[in-house]
Image (spheres, rainbow, N blue to C red):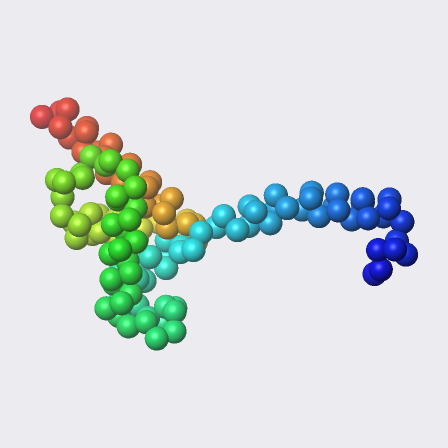
Length: 129
């Protein structure tokens, strides 16, 4: 469509329509790069759904790095008190307890939920002693 043959009113309508659709596109992009299910598979070293050429060890290393980055993003109750593999095991158990729909959500958000629950339980345990 040549702009010179199109009325200015039509162009304004088209531009306005695209602007209205932008929030929906941005919302769709916020799903995240890795789902809870993909993180479970990476922790287990699964390569069926991994990027081409990635080995089991590379999958597990990816999961370790991903979890470490999430832990490093905030000061958690377990920071410096638990070993990384213990935190990974707790996170893995939490993720496995979720249904398939929840596991389709962003792994970072699910991990933060798990860390928050762990810290809440940890505080409660210390208060009752």
